[in-house]
Image (cartoon, rainbow, N blue to C red; front, top):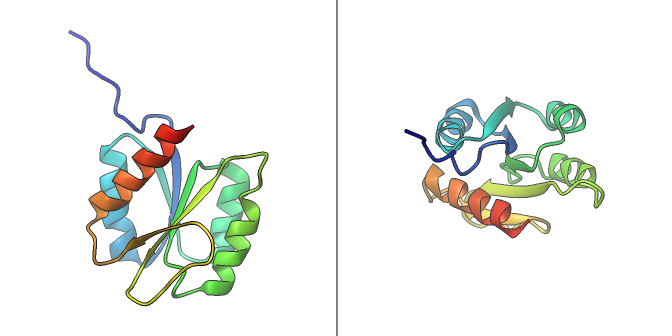
Length: 119
């Protein structure tokens, strides 16, 4: 018997958020097959981006708007990295895609699946 590969198999995702939110997102994304790495600060995220070259970074840019700019600048055209902002009400990131924090972690997974499907 063969099993279908998880839809996000081979997709690397870096999450920068508070520990409880990171864990919730990590579990949801890993269950879908993604390789997930978590960070606490924008400096750590940039270092992991350089090391891992992830397909997607998920972060709360409402907490660290300057960090969001540093992270966005790492997502160069020669390496297709997308930024998803998982943010609270009233925060409108200038760059990247937004998933409201009122949405469950599964909404972030759906956004990642959409991005991966775009290739």
